[in-house]
Image (tube, rainbow, N blue to C red; front, side, top):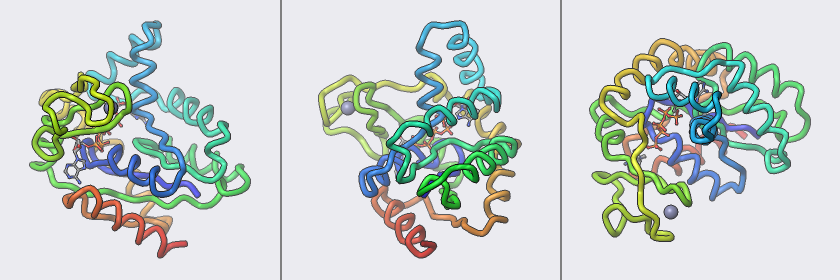
Length: 219
Ligand code: AP5
Ligand code: ZN
């Protein structure tokens, strides 16, 4: 069924979504990645989205809900999926709960929500050191999880890139937005019971193992 990964910017949602995707064979749906491709599209909407993302603010609930609704119609979601970066407001959470209640099969099962917890000083290093592969999407960190050759993806040799919102200034804005609008989403899912927290400040494989064992306990 559906898995939601919740947690502050840099907590490791994207990294864990990719681990779980490999383990379970269900897709990662990252609203951040979907919006970054919209931003890169060169359209009017793309320019608007880019401006909002670079301020560390959120795009409208209507826009992301619509993007997620379209993505969920693709056949690879039928056995379940991992949502990364969504829902991020209480309105998005209410929309998702109602939308999934109408689905049949595995996609309509109750969600399991996982909060990945990492403290603030560690988050700063994670954001400052993050580098992404534009070809395969692998996420590296120059301090914590470096590629074998600096600046180059291990898999196909592409040059790694830094996200334009990974500046110290923008990170502060993203944290502020997170505390104000997204922290209440955690309480929303905590209240529904199919919720657990994992310590994100462990090696990637250990965080993944904690998530897997907690999800299996709930099944
Ligand atoms: P989004 O792309 O979702 O950004 P975010 O929430 O700020 O999260 P990040 O991608 O920064 O962090 P992450 O938790 O995925 O960490 P990662 O695995 O990369 O959103 C970007 C923007 O899009 C938003 O600001 C907003 O404007 C917009 N947006 C997106 N969704 C939206 C929505 N639903 N509604 C409205 N607007 C929306 O890891 C970080 C670093 O740490 C990496 O370098 C990684 O290598 C390293 N790392 C990870 N795990 C470990 C570990 N266990 N040990 C050591 N290092 C680790
Ligand atoms: Zn790559």
